[in-house]
Structure formats: C-alpha cells, structure tokens
Length: 130
Image 1 (cartoon, rainbow, N blue to C red):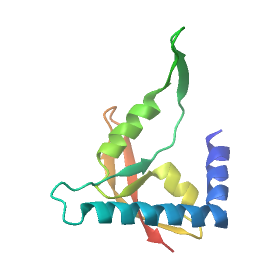
Image 2 (cartoon, rainbow, N blue to C red):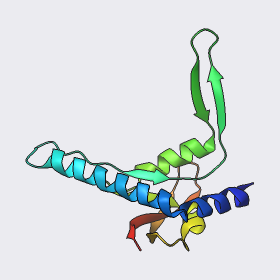
Image 3 (cartoon, rainbow, N blue to C red):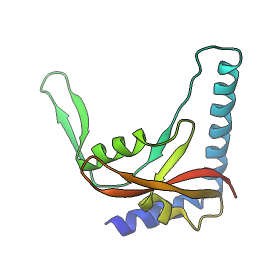
Image 4 (cartoon, helix red, strand yellow):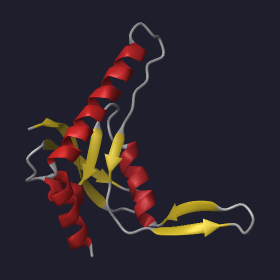
C-alpha cells in the first residue's frame, strides 16, 4: 500500500550510511559538472525529480525483449520534472511527507504544479543538508 511504501522510504532515508553515500554522490556530481562547465561556452545543467505512484511494468516483444514502464504516474512524473528548475532536485508532496521529519535533508515548498491531466501537485525542492 501507499502508506507502507512511504513509511519504508522514510525509514531508509534515516539510514546513516545510505545518507553518507548520497551526500558523496551529490558532491561528486556537483564537482564534475562545475569542472566541466568551467570556461566552457556550452554549459551542462541538470534537473531531477522524485515522484511517487503506481506503475505497470511490461515486457514487449517475443524475440528481442524491450521493457517499459507505463501508467499515469509516468506521465505525471515527466510533467512534474519538466517544471523543476534547472540545477534542482524536486520532490512531490508524497515524497516530502515521507521525508519531512528526516534527520538529513531539508526541503522547501516551491510551487503548485498543474499536470497535463489537470491534477494539481505541490512541488518541493531539496535545499541542502540539515
């Protein structure tokens, strides 16, 4: 169920070793992008988002297999990501609620996002470590 999954997510984020690894990866990515962009006319910018929902996973083909993830959640996540500012990590309200009391990460409310299906979703941005 949704509740159990968000509880599990919140529990995993409290794992100190996992958070150390995430911090190291985050710093490495920042340094690599900064180093690559220094003095370069064409700048690399990224955005990332964490979104939660139900999906369907399918195998397509009989000789050469292709795997795909389908469902409204995929579309919503894509629309959500399109509205994430460059250089930022966004989280949906479900993710924020699961992580708002964690010991490691801070989020700030950014804006309401209107998805293509008309659904309104609150967007939160990762704003550093606590």
